Length: 259
Image (cartoon, rainbow, N blue to C red; front, side):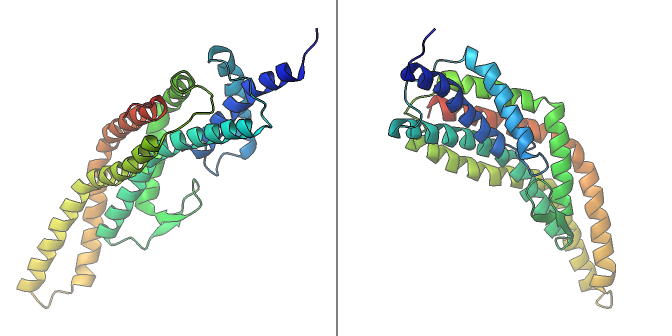
C-alpha cells in the first residue's frame, strides 16, 4: 500500500479538526473544563470522543492542515467548540449571580470562599448553588446530552472553512442577557422575602427607636435568610432543567445557523 502526501494530510485532518472542536468544548464547558479536572484528563476525554465520533460524522475536507486554509479551519473549529461551551457555562453563571444577589440581601456578601471551578472568590451562597447545580446536572445526564449535541453539531455544521456567522455571535451576546434574567428569576423569591423582612425591621425601629437594628436585626435577617434558602432549594432542579433546555437549544441554533 502506498500513501501520497495528500492522502496523509486528509487522514490527519479528518481526526485533527474534530479534536480541536471537541477539545475547545471540553475546555470551556462547566464541570469538565474546570481547574478541578486536570488537563491530561480533558485531553484523554477529547481523544476518546474523537475516536468514537470520527467514523460517524461527515468527512473533513481534503485540505492541508498546515496551509493557510487549514489554519482557518482550525480557528473555526476552536471557535465553534469554545462558543458551545460558553453557552452552557452561562447556566452555571446564572446560579452564581443569583447566589451573589441573595448573599448581598442577607448581609453576608463579605463571607466568601474560593470557587475551585474558576479559582475566584464567590459568596458562600453561590458556592452552595454551584455544588447543587453540579450534582443536579450530572443526575439529569446533562453530560450525555452535551455529547449528543456535540455529535449533532458535526452534521449540522460540518468541518469546513465556513464557520460561525456574525448572526451567531449576536446570538451569543443575547445569551448573556438571558443569563442575567435567569439569575434574577432564581434569586427573586429570596430577595422579595428578605426585602419584606428588612421593611418590617424598618417599621419596628421607627416605632421603637431604642431598638438597636444592627444588634437585633442582623441575626434575625441571617436566620430568615437561611430559612428562605432552605424553602427555595426544591426550586433549583426545575429552574436548572429549564435553563439547560434553553441553552441546549441555543447551542443547536448556534451550529445550525437558524436565526
